Length: 295
Image (tube, rainbow, N blue to C red; front, side, top):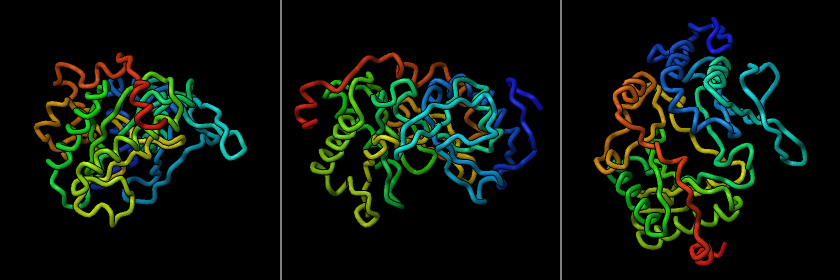
């Protein structure tokens, strides 16, 4: 069958066995949410998680665009380890459908666009709680980070990760390099750890996370990615990384209800877009803050 000029083969192939969600179902999901998802996924180098035999069977990460990809999927050439490699890039709904054809379940965009690869325009604080921590601990942490960022002149946006955590995403003017942006996010994480060591850690070691929330600032390194807004995850029940209103975070709205099945219904019922302003803010990390960071 054809959709948006892309041929979908094996539409009945099951991608989520426990839920019976097929490639065609995933196509229909993107047809419903494409207008919301494309602005956050398009024009950026992508890392993909492909699951040819569906979730629960072996899946693999793919950074480089191989031969035989649908024409709707473009590429950007990036120098890497002494050679030039092609990273996948999409521009529209057809590109998303092309990813479905490749049995891609997860889409992880770069924090920089393909056009400005060396100057990120989004930075992400990934809040990853230890097993068993109450969800309210995570939402409180996200709100605390929002307020700390506001105090230095930066607005931020929240989304679920499709797992047990939250992302706090800060749009930026693409003026600073990766090293400067990473230094800033590390500084913010370190401030929270210093003030509340019983609540937070910036150490990725599992033993350091016991009873704490790991603030992962390494998502902001060159070549690193974070799960994209509206991307499903390769996990049971087809959870989705979904943008939230801050009011929802403050009310500790739980993430389990946001799935490939339910998200189209949510978006159809929303009166406005929780991330409507993310591409309109013209904000930067100030010179004063950069001096404090030492970047």
